[in-house]
Image (tube, rainbow, N blue to C red; front, side):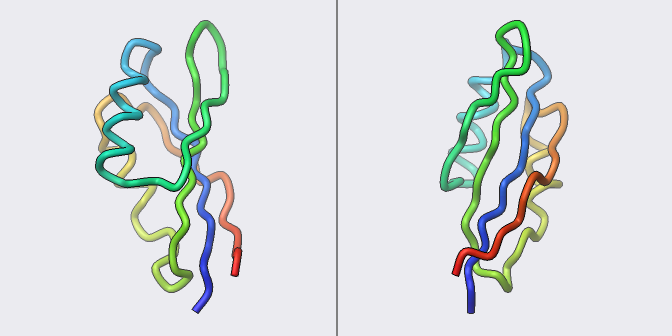
Length: 83
């Protein structure tokens, strides 16, 4: 069984909700890493990285992240086999 790294790009609704949104994502989903990506005017998008078993795959991560308060959009950025 291998492992995959899944990178999702998460966009907040506004700069005012992004900190609360990221805290909720950290608590509920336990991602491996979260990297802020400046967009404009204090607004960041976030690359949220998960490492999972390849059989588990991406699953419903994208849909589940869209349900987090303050999330505007979620896009799958990359899925890579790492071992």
